[in-house]
Amino acid sequence: TLNPPDENFKKSLVMKAIKQAIRTKRPNGTHQVKVCVVCDRVIIGEEKVCNISTERLEENQHRISVDVYEEFYRKTLHPLLVEQYSVEGLDRLLLSPRAYREGDNFECCQSCNSSMQPSKAKKKGSKPPKYAIANGFAIGHFPSVIQIPGEAERRRIVPII
Image 1: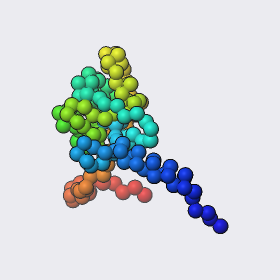
Image 2: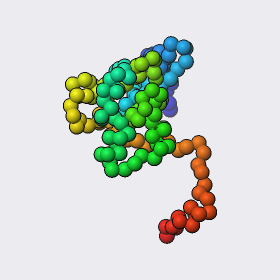
Image 3: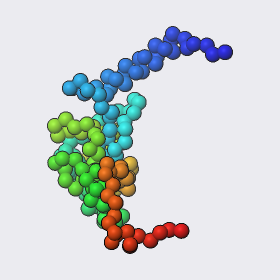
Image 4: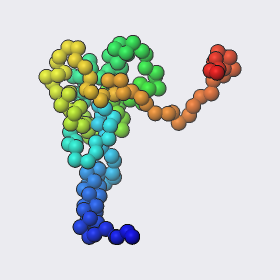
């Protein structure tokens, strides 16, 4: 037989839920999950949420830009993918539009924040942060509308058997 959870367990769950609700509350009263602008990962649990300025992001453009990504991987990113990782005012940088922005500051995970410090930004040839979008994690999402190829394009498509 199953026993109902004890009162202490129930209270601990309620306290965790309240703590998470407080953590995700924005100044305008809405709630938004914490997402890192550099790696597009959700910042969960007790992980520290840092702020990173547009100035710091621009100082690291040689590590997180579309151009550097394309040069390193020797592939041109599809324009739709570049658009999906665009943030207003920071053109050609691979950043998460899902990250919360307040003025010139974005939320950032502690790992990316420490990797984007000025000492690392000044190193020529330094790599992007480990989980950065620009470090091969530009996977994007399905567009809301998928275009069906026309007759000419369909003739060029070779069926795989």
